[in-house]
Image 1 (cartoon, one colour):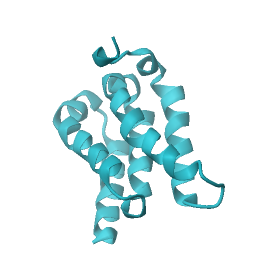
Image 2 (cartoon, helix red, strand yellow):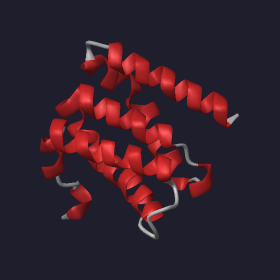
Image 3 (cartoon, helix red, strand yellow):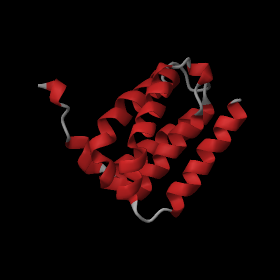
Image 4 (tube, one colour):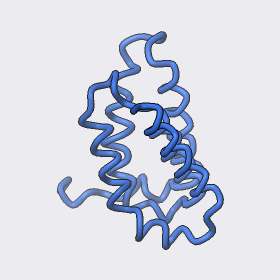
Length: 123
């Protein structure tokens, strides 16, 4: 089952790389992407798939600032939960480390405006 999930995530990555209308992608797939991040965050670290991080890394690279409103969710659900996995030592979860740092790099390079959006709950 995990192999099928990984293949589906790779298929979505390919679609994102080939897509040219990212506004449509954002509107049509936002709920599914939100559910994917929630599933990643709430699942056991050993059941998580590093392809999710690579998918969102590609999404940030190609859709960039169109994803700025979604960035707080990504930071909480993906970045914070992955950081909890990899900060214990430098040898566990090597496949997550690559995806994590690619995601952070693409957020900084392509979606930096989203870093300055404050959540309404922060006030």
